[in-house]
Length: 159
Image (cartoon, rainbow, N blue to C red; front, side, top):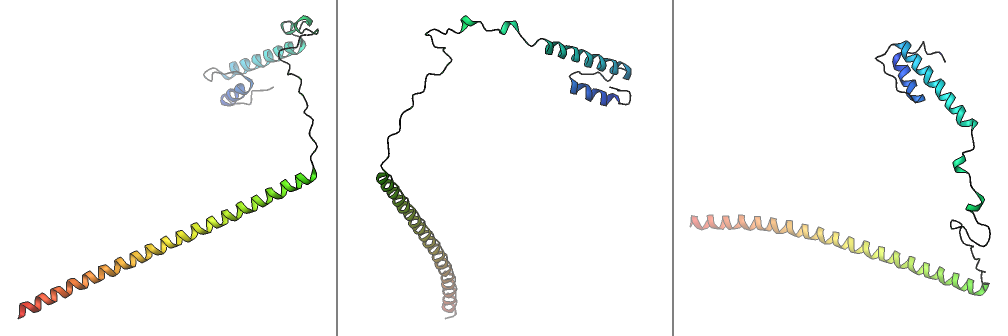
């Protein structure tokens, strides 16, 4: 690959992608040489790994897995299949009908509870409105009472 057209920054970035950290303080030609050397060495190491696919330390000996009578500890136990009992269609239909009826009843109870909650909420809101209105009336009556008392006191003073 021709790296001569690349800048030092580009060489450094490309070097990171292939697994080498380049020092930009060095000259561009030194960086290119380091990059080429790294790529060649990586290709040689890769070809060495591919040429030797068998690892001797990972070979499995036959005596490691006994065949006669002993079960391997990592093998799962035999799964026993439990035969299904035949189902009476009339019983299944009855159970389904009861489940449907139960679901319908619970749905209706839920709807009624929501309706009851909405009514209670509306009543509470209505009561708050009535309370606020009565409080406003009480305040206006108090103000009128104070004015009436002041008028009465001023009329007493004139006499």
